[in-house]
Length: 180
Image 1: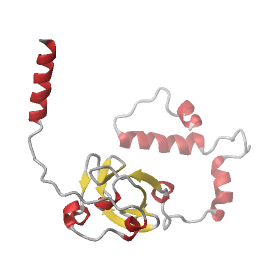
Image 2: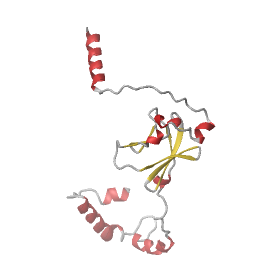
Image 3: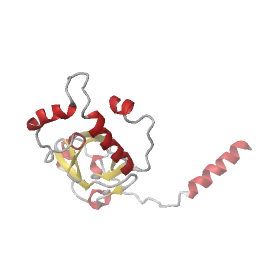
Image 4: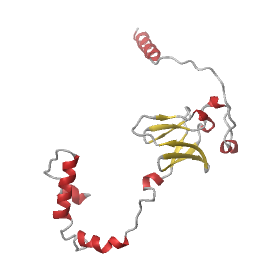
């Protein structure tokens, strides 16, 4: 990367990504691949030809980032955050640490090795994926992994739904009372 930054990038301008890629390809072919490398003392294009037969196809394997297991703590809203999006897990796992791994186009969420949720990977950020079966109102038995530890009691309460502007009004009133 240092070689690229110091030798290709300085003094160039690009109309768009296609122009950048075209300039880069031209530079690779005319300059980078045919120079004598300072460490190997070979031209990179020749070195590649020598090593190409030893390369192994990896298209069928998950990338490092996809295979990476990520620990997440389940929030009070029974969601875990992954790459800027939030995904539901069964309500019983609030406060517990779960493991998340990407398998193809899905996030697989496990607790102590048992799969507790599976969601399609959401595009972009600030998206939400909720499985209704994960909700406290689903009235199901706790998952086996939840029984192995202390299950959380299900507290049924009516929750008032109100517009968030109510809180803004309360904050505004509170500021005026403090000033008075």
